[in-house]
Image (tube, rainbow, N blue to C red; front, side):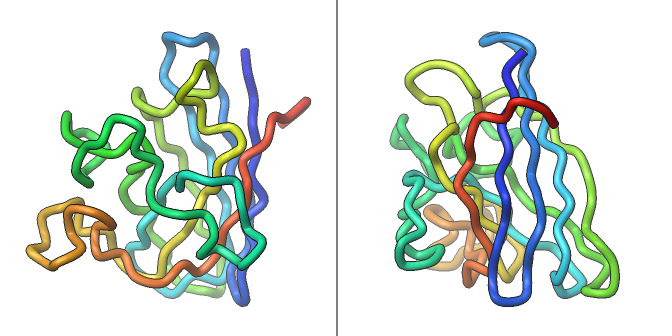
Length: 155
């Protein structure tokens, strides 16, 4: 089993995202707990670079090694980093949940280890919103918090 962790930091948003994968062919389990989010849906994506020198902006675009359009986690045509939305009940309590994804991996040349996880201000429209940036970013808005995904010894 391989484990990874990401510590999310932003001006008002913080938390942890934990990743586990049994083997290279198994899906990845993503457990998250994030505080400081406004009520509603928030885009949740793995971005291409593990670079936060200029805050979340230097993480680059969504991780997309296959050159596909932005989509929902269940779509065939999606970026590897497209994990959809997480839903917050508001800033008073943590936003917690689990996602299982068959496209991201902690193994191989397209591993997400060393890349950046970002929580966005707005809902990811899953490429269906009709906005100019729907097919690239899901029109998910500002980058509220981010962190580099690293290998973990224990979770």
